[in-house]
Image 1 (tube, rainbow, N blue to C red):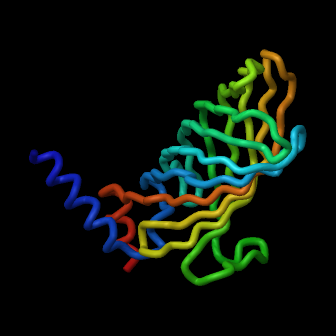
Image 2: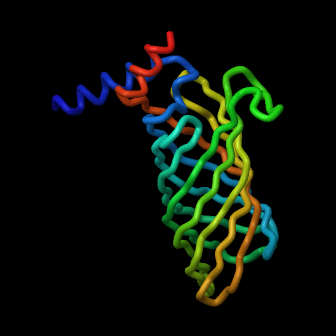
Length: 196
């Protein structure tokens, strides 16, 4: 019970930190993509509902590394059967600083980022076709901070699977919408306080 109360206090304290402190070295990012639109390069476009939880640790300011899990159901528009997607692997994310290399924020409360992932993944289709193999992706995104520690995110990503099953390479471009929660550690909080 004490751990639960302590975790709650940390979460509330995290919401009170400044917006500039969420992507500092030592912080954690947890979140998920919830909705995805698939612009298929092999089979045509479609829509999918996916739960893609991810977690990452900021090893440097603006640089986070971590992992992801992908679980989803998708349907393409050309009448193909429903497909179940799955995957697990590592991800990296780099946030652009305001004014970095001439890149300014679209809005005052957000940050552009690039995300890449690599892992093991696959898909299983109702008619028996399946593939499992190397799961990879890369693309730009934008995180709009509705509070100092909660960001709504949009991510356009090239996703590919180099499969070892019935299909060779399966690739598509996706547009994902989700959220992330940025949890500051005590070290990151002390750095933010020293900067004030």
